[in-house]
Length: 315
Image (tube, rainbow, N blue to C red; front, side):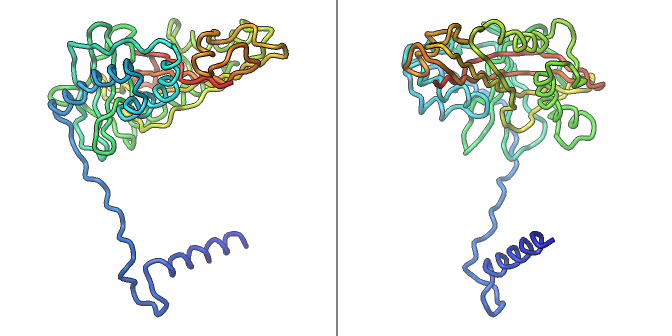
């Protein structure tokens, strides 16, 4: 109770000291409240302009221009571009060229304070891209996310039904998708209640994480799964449900009691490119998994597209 009273007193003091004078009159020099940016819609020309940024991004990777890579990316792609670009300078191969064509654009049907859209490029490999407008410019947030089979049919005509997070049905299911992935991959005993069908890549990923400690012995390996912070962005499906775009980060810690790791998880060349060292005794590594997940009206989860990338290694 005392802590609560102190907090209330502090709040009152702050209110008195901000926007008011000692005599109770309003302070005309008080800072005005920030005005939210107006909601905006995305048109076909906006989408085409944003998609053309992939060529700039490809050029930045080729030139090892890490500042430009950071400028053109955000969210999960920002995670993948930061330290990985520095590793490319040290000899690690750059990402494959982003020379994609035959593109379908899926433009959300509702205005947003931070506009976004999804592109499905059919060549050379069918892949999703999600672009977000931040700080008055377009940035790549996710992509390429390699399509694993047939693309689900989205609820689209001129525009595509965007799934709002406050929708009591599709919105709630979409918002829970990243947390369900986290629960599934963090529960090696299978007690979370989250299920994926046989053959889904999430099941293979869980099996991989379970087996890796035995593969790298006598080194010791532990891993943890986190969500990459981002807004929930989802597009509606024709038959109900949603296609959700999100990302996970897998954190690894590998150690040895010997002079050097016997089986570096990502190989000696990768360790050297990221750390500038060889023969290390311990590494901390992170991998980002980009996902497009279909969630049906009855809550069933299916991985539609997936791409994995090594984000960082420190020693």
